[in-house]
Amino acid sequence: MTNHELYMKEAVKEAGKAFEADEVPVGAVIVHNKRVIARAHNQIKLLKDPTAHAEMIAVTQAANALRNERLNNCDIYVTIEPCPMCMGALVLARVRNLIFGAEDSKTGACGSVITIGADNKFNHKIRIYKGVLKDECASLIKNFFKNKREEGSQWVLLKAGGRKEKVSH
Ligand SMILES: [Zn+2]
Image (cartoon, rainbow, N blue to C red; front, side, top):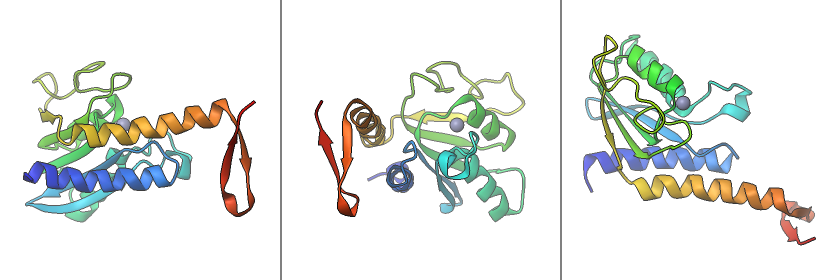
């Protein structure tokens, strides 16, 4: 397993925590000098905050850890292609490398919908790598939305002990 995969595994673990908490399963870790200095997952519902994306939380954590608003020589590993807001934050934070797993055709800002930060248009350029543990990263998201669709399309009878039983109608 490469270093990229090892760190992505950590991000996948974070995404798993989001999945458990019924949040869209995206996880992120930030690495500085081979050390993980931030790990986070989506907390949008928990915090009732549309900006509480894994990357945003991780950036704040890393800045606190380094006591520096600039994340010089930091690399971020994210399970899913970041959105425009997060790419904006990564440019502001001067992150060095972004490594992400699966693409996001709906909101991705690293080539899927638009591209932010990969060229010299801003005052900081981020090197972007994609496809690390892609299938693992994508399957969490797929399962999450598959469950959501199933929950939405069928009555769910809540049994004692919180066990759910699907009832066709
Ligand atoms: Zn985002």
